[in-house]
Image (tube, rainbow, N blue to C red; front, side, top):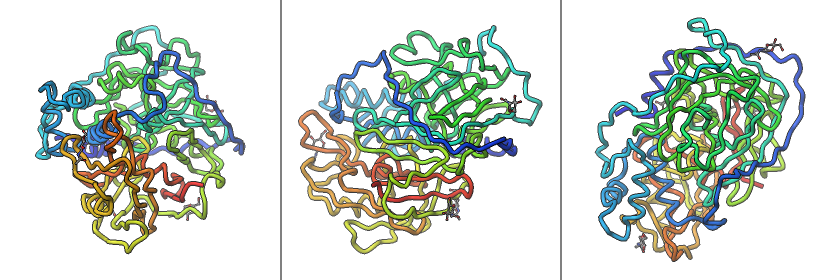
Length: 472
Ligand SMILES: *[C@@H]1O[C@H](CO)[C@@H](O)[C@H](O)[C@H]1NC(C)=O
Ligand SMILES: *[C@@H]1O[C@H](CO)[C@@H](O)[C@H](O)[C@H]1NC(C)=O
Ligand SMILES: *[C@@H]1O[C@H](CO)[C@@H](O)[C@H](O)[C@H]1NC(C)=O
Ligand SMILES: *[C@@H]1O[C@H](CO)[C@@H](O)[C@H](O)[C@H]1NC(C)=O
């Protein structure tokens, strides 16, 4: 089965390294940009956390990393349309898995075919750059010093979007420290697919250049994802600017992205070795900007049901308390990965239950997925917590007071607040809640937005390390 890791480790073999051009001057500026409202979006749930958001987020995480679904989730999806009370949820979960989704897929895993998504050639008439000489990535420049943008959670904190300006056009993108492609909804997609979405129009950008013959295809292991052709343009995130940034123009996207009308695409912020552009792999926005940033960092400040900030080039110490605890990153797999072997509950004695355990810091995953031993140890301290087969994950009474979780981040214990682990009600009655901490079926563990809501995180591309401190 082609997993996210395997697919991209192969691609890593053909990765290229190129020194970033040096800046003529570094300006230590910081910028704030307001979020852009999507005029096409109709909000139906207000700010209440959406029922069913928990199982949806869990299925998305499994999808993203191509992990086999646990029996319980597989069974729910297999019941889609069976007329049970869970049928609505089941159908929806099945939709999230998209065309590649395997109803009834179990922990045995399933042999998945090749990704169904295929790039289409770009329309003629777009300005083209000369094709890159074999093996030599196109240069990109970066200017403008630091940048900072407000990020805003969608209802239920399922994803955090922030404005990005591409060739002068501002769209809302999902910043994803767990992948390395910058791909965008654009005017090559059908009107049906674009319905409700903002879209980037390369023909309206004076700085766009097609990279003739370049394509991308990002697959999240089960066949869902995006594919298309590739160009370059100027990208500005809150003032941090890169010219000649690879923009991946989707011509095919899976169902889950089509239905998520708030997001115009993803900004991948993991290491460039995971980038899927062929024939010449492209660098991430962060890698391109690195040389001109005042400090070689970007930071994630994500809040529960409130705007936070993504910042490039500076660490804003008003956003966290105490010093940042720094831990080295294991870049082997291209993720922001670190050792995570131990946990404690409510400040109790730590247990090293995951010897040799690793985890990744992933802003693009909603939940926190940890080893089964962590999940079992934590919820043993929560009255009424059960592994609930109806929704395929741990639930507990919404009225429960959850203890804090301490989790090992490279040898330092970081705290995830109990309040942040109480993720969302599973139904309209609001009596049963879905846990923000759920079990993974494989290593590495995935520490998503639940972890970030409790902790400010600095991603340091200068010395490949992560700095973590509790939110202010
Ligand atoms: C990079 O910067 C140099 C000097 O400022 C400029 O001449 C060149 O056109 C830029 N390249 C790109 C791809 O924007
Ligand atoms: C990385 O650099 C930061 C400064 O930006 C420093 O405080 C930290 O100790 C370094 N971390 C490692 C693991 O070298
Ligand atoms: C780094 O990550 C790789 C891939 O996940 C893993 O096999 C390896 O053991 C890790 N190295 C260290 C020193 O933890
Ligand atoms: C399992 O989840 C369902 C919601 O789908 C809920 O009605 C039920 O009470 C939960 N079971 C337990 C034991 O909490």
